[in-house]
Structures are given as C-alpha cells and as structure tokens.
Length: 111
Length: 116
Image 1 (cartoon, rainbow over the protein chains, first blue to last red):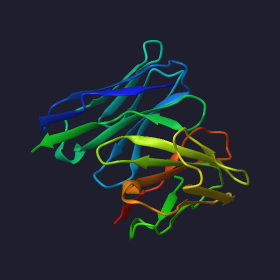
Image 2 (cartoon, one colour):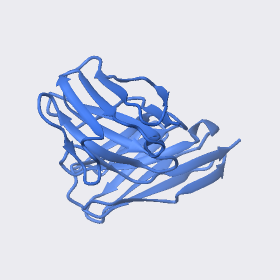
Image 3 (cartoon, each protein chain N blue to C red):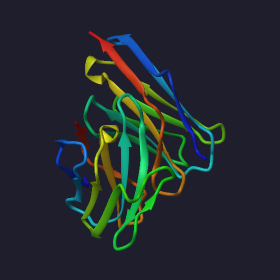
C-alpha cells in the first residue's frame, strides 16, 4: 500500500527566504506526482505535476523535483512571500487514477 | 482549464438527516470521479471511485450504504450522506478526470459538512 510522508509538518519562515518542502513515498511505481496548495477551509490548487519520466518541473518561483527510484520529491519555493502561507500537499498517482496524499506541510511566511 | 464545481459549499444539518452533495464537471466530460474526505488538519483520504454508469468502488472502511454515490451522467456525480452523525462532519472534496486519456485530476472547491 502506497504511503506518502511530508516533512516538516509545519514551517514558519521570514519573508524572502528560500525553502524546501519534502515528500517521500514508499512505492516507486508511480505514474506521476503532484504538488497542491490548500488555503484554510478551501479546496486544492494544483501547483506542479511531474510525470514519472520527468525529473523536475518549474512554475515561477516554484520548482519541484522527482527522484522516483528513491521515492522522493521536493518542492522548492524561492523568495517566499506572506501570500505563500498555506498548506502544501504532495500526492502520487499509482495508476489507480485516484491520488494518495501526504499529510501536508503547513507553511507560514512572516512579513 | 477544466472546472469542477461542488454544491453546496457549506451545509449544516441535524443528526439523523441525509445530505446530498453534487459534483459537476462544467466544461468537460468526466468518465471517472473521485470522492475524498478531509478531517481537520489531516490530509485527504479517498472514499470511493465512481465511473459513469456503473457502481462506485469504495475504499476499505467506507460504508457504501452510508455514503451513497451516484454517477448518472458524464458531468454529474452525487454523494449522499445518509443518517448523518456528528462524526461525519468533515470536508468532502470531489475530483474528476476526463475522457482524453490524461491522468490529470481536477478538484472541486469542497463541501464543508457540519452535523449537529
């Protein structure tokens, strides 16, 4: 059974810092991995999707990497801003098409 | 981009009543829809997978008689929480995949259910 773990569970940083969120998964046989953002009480916003054949994806200040063989992904956020404060969820698609989610990292960027 | 809507966004009901939540794909045909549940400060857990025109497949531990799922068309799936109890209070989120063969899932905005 696929298990997804995210570290740290919570993170508080001052504005302007670069930061890294970590995601690990137990079964490396994945189709893709996706990073989402969730604001309190809201739905999910897809940030980046990495196919299993890819090693990274970039969108603006966000960069996600994937090392499928070691079961790891990182989300790099450059020059963090208070508006980046949210919970970041990592999810893997193992071919069942439903996603297996990690428990998330709650990020607080202090102005 | 593809849009998925959910209705209602919030619902408060008394214990013992039934609540129906709708999930609609607005600009694409969704062959498969997924229902997730999220308890406070926890991640999303898959409840069931529904394919248009067939019975839903439920995850282990999810009672199919309590959480009725109907996927009658390519744009609509409904989740009915029957005889709701306070422990059913949660955030319910649906997602949908299209007919184009892509695995991209599009998520709805979620429904906050509170059972008194």
